[in-house]
Image (cartoon, rainbow, N blue to C red; front, side, top):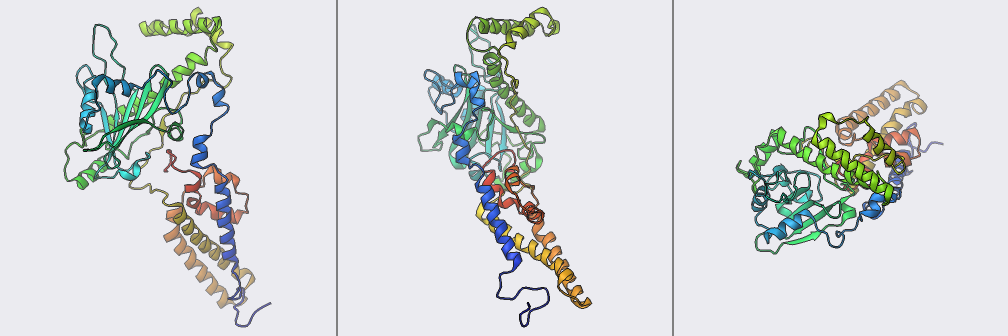
Length: 443
């Protein structure tokens, strides 16, 4: 049935256009699919039941505060020196004092990063990340603390806050700490952070760092030049140099790799040999014996000798069926000049709905010549209109929305091929809901 004045193949002006209906349906699907994914709060407060069945996590609690009677390495350093130094270059100098040759720790600047304080960092006041590399000084007792791979700092001047990842030797775990109100004229407060929130990114409960070529750090000349341009000087920033080289980022990455081996060592010691008891103690004694033997003379060590076979026999009774995984502290490399943030969820959702309308209008226009216009001029006009819409869509809209669909949304979206294709191009509408504040993509 056609209305007066209606063009062939088109809906009446007062009717709700099919393209708009599909766009609204697609939007509802976006929200329903994404709302069903766990939120950042749910992820922070939930635990992996299979993971918590391990002996390690029963022996090493995951509470925000450290176990009673234990403190972090950073706590011990501050207590030993009697004060938290200010400004931040004094903190760097303090860590350098623990090195046998007074060498400063590794520092890098990240103006546009992925920490919880990324909103307060910029090219004028970049985030400073520090990795302690001190080799203990030779002393009569040899009791100087081991800092390499066990202490990491992140300072953002605009937030007046220092983020700390510091190993707790007695508890066998890393502590997540904050120094708040770290600014002139204020009284700094050292507190323990909400551990569950930290581990949504630090999934191995240790340090993380990007992979090569570390494009968001001052290991890249483009980042250096942008900071110098904003600051108007190439002088060190709070004791952190600007002229880093690629080797600095590589060494920083190596420190985080060392840091991620430490929790694995705990799991080998506890889960690898099982509960305390005669068999468990014998297993650990044999493991320690072989470790000292390997440390003393690596060249003569053999994994096939009788002592190694004895350790395998002792471990066989309690070794986890799935093995003991090695935590990976690597996150995806990110270029802040080309990898744009997802933006505000509601803004992206409206943009996605607009793009959905354009896409479906284009699909409808492409189909109108099949069932609507019968004359050749009408078909040509339809093709021209459809072509113009597709060209506009590809040249303006699609480059901003070409990110792949997230697994959480894709698996939950049971839709037809046409709507599924539409959802692919509008995946950024789902992204802020399904991947809130995650580290590997920010992606």
